Image (cartoon, chains in turn red, blue):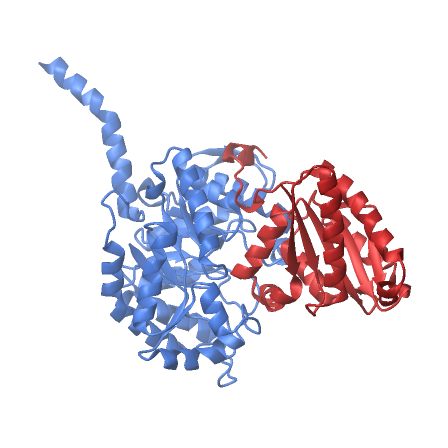
Length: 197
Length: 375
């Protein structure tokens, strides 16, 4: 089973980020299915854990809901990460989540970055804001990201083609990567090795 | 089962009055609280170590030495002693002296410390935290156990022909607990040496505490110290109690809401649901505390954080009165269903007895041989 997780930072259940995430999830799972893979797609809407994230930021306490969200990331063969653009960058909520996640969970995990914005003037947000974040987290970045401006949702074909191309590239990455799914926080290194270190 | 207190020693404004106690008041309050802890029958008083305001305990052995002189039965401990930024030689010296002064009523809980600037202030790098904890403790153990130590490591100037003075009381090192919230390496360290493992159990949900403790227990058995359920486990916890649970909530909420560590975040109710904090009636405190065993198994030491967040001394002493009244029931509850093979936390007396028993056992074959020869 190949598990995809769509993480979206839209603040409305019908936000265009959620919509773009859904479309990318569907397109990728169809592309994977065409390669003979069994696929499941999970959705993690960050708005549903927003207060858990701020509480975690202030206290360091991860709520049960937050632990569950981290477990969803750990179980994912690929993460589709979608944020709206606020003031020229991903939203604070989007960053809060990846800050709370810590450095290890995205390491070696395929990620397809995507963003939504009012106009195409924000298209490069993925390249200048999201890509550095995921490089820092040592995620495996898919080579074809998707930006959708409001006008794209009414335009002919363009966005659909970009979603198809992104899904195809992401599928190749997901099939090759096999990220770790174990929980590194409770892994033991034998003490004789630690002493020797 | 040992029951006691641990405190970080914060100097915090009382949010209900706007009054900030002086460092002097807080240091004296720590002494008053420790004396009260002994008076109500608690087993352990532990103080933290910090090297930055708003905390006062930068010199724990001075404070504990003074408390040792004012008490006679309570075990004095730390929560935690910084094994990373302290020189292990100085730790060995300071705690040896304290152990002598307190007639053995001393153990230590080691921790790394998570205040970034403290490391460079003491010439260290926080990124070396785990390595420092491992190397420094390996040296500390040898200083307490070997008469002449020759040693070279990565972080400290080498020692050649070093002998610790004073040697530990009765030649037996203080028992050591290793405190860690989320580092498996520290659970592994505690397991490797057969030392105690303490989880502060304040900032995480019980599920996390359970995983860390079970890791320690598993590795304790792996390293040959005995079955996993005989590993030496300590837990933290915190409560605020009044006879009427709503009174407890109303009185504690203003302190909780702006507390330096978790204030301005979750609501009191959320924090109570997600962590072991209990604010309510003594009965609720009793039930919650006795439920910890269901997650971590039978354990040896339960420490409560009661003195914090700007609570006035008077209130803290009232909380201790409540804890004192609860104590017989807590002890009864902890004893219930506890199998006979679950050990108590080691004390100086039990460590001396164990050492002597081991020495006798080693000497026995010789005695048998001698008596046979005499026949």
